[in-house]
Structures are given as structure tokens and as C-alpha cells.
Image (cartoon, rainbow, N blue to C red; front, side):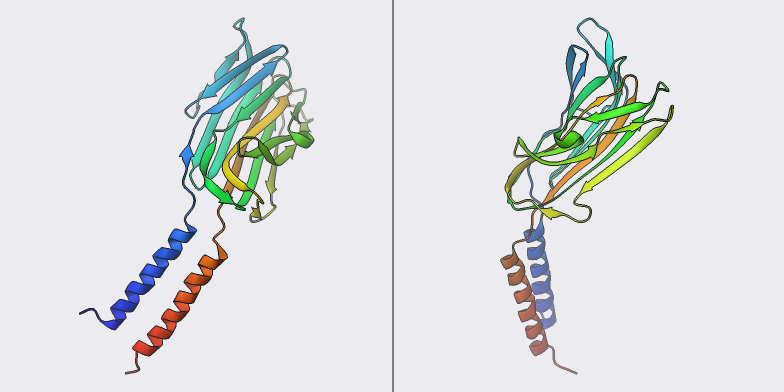
Length: 242
């Protein structure tokens, strides 16, 4: 027969497993591509990358002329759900506009989940006459998070410039400043986007993260804690002093 102590251990393990299930992240359907739309003067070209890009790719207009260079592109999707977007681009001979969209991560509906967005940008002056990154998202920002296909959530990284020749500058933002904040809506998908104009010949890179997590239901937590409290009383009754 199984002793009383072993029975208690099995109950503790079962409750621990149950609480893990309640706190488990949502699973979903993942999509990978990173989409670039590049505009230089009157030319507009779109490029889609289904795999991480580790070598430079020239963006050519219909005449075969290079209007920009995509040095790196990567969109890492996790089913927690989290979407990470990374890029590295160089403008053509004229000021160049880039719109960079991550893959979409879809998942079973989360009601009022917690979320956090962060973005880091690096701007480098390549031709020695200064560099400017002008945000085209709401409020003149560069990075935007999106949920449910079209709802704009958070905008980060305001426009900025580098004035010293051949210099570079990093700008980082996070919302909220620490921890995570409640998103008062029902969320079924998330995505990230960068949109900006980069001064001619200069280079910009960025990494953005959009993380959404379910909030455990209070009644579920109360039930688990109540069960553990009852188990404590059971232990006291069954385990007698020697």
C-alpha cells in the first residue's frame, strides 16, 4: 500500500501541475514573413523575406537601379505570444522611405491580457553630412505595435538626427517603462511595424518586441490556494509527532 506521506506528495504534485496548466501561455498559428515596402523618389518596391536575411540584398526599381539596400531582416515569432522584428537598411542616393512589417502571430482570444512593447534604433551617418530618421507613425514615431489586424496599440521612438560626421546614435524606448500593463480588449493577433524616412546614403537598424501574456483568472488562483491550504490541514492531521 502507498503510505500517507506518499499520498500527500502525489496531491502536491497534482496541484502544482494544475496551477502550471492555468498559467500556461496561449498557443497559436504562426506566420513568418517580413515585408519591406521601399519608396525612393517615385519608385515603390516591395520585398518579402520568408527566412532570416543575413546577407545584403539590393532593392531595384523597374529600371534595374538600386534604390536601397536591405542588410538584415528577421522576424522571430513565439507562441507565448511574442513577435520580435529586426532590420538593418541603407537608403539610396535620395531620401528613402521604409515600411517594415513583421509576421502576424495569431492565437486563441485573450481577454484583457498584459502587454509590453519595446524598441531600439541605431542611426549611422555614412556619407559624412549628418543623418536623419523621420518617423511616419502616429505622433512622428518610428515603431508601432498592432493587434487584431488593424488596431494601433503603442508608438515608440520619435524622430531624431545625428549631426557629427560619420557618427551614430542609439535610441531605446519601452511601454510601459517597467513591467507590463493591461490591454483592455480581446486580443487574437499581434504584429509590429516600422515606418520612417531615412536620409540619403545613411543606415538605420532596429529591434522591436511586442509581448502579450494572459492574466491568470483570480478565481482559479483562489481555488488552487484554497486547495493548498486544505492540504496543509490534512498534512497536520496525518503526520503525527514521533
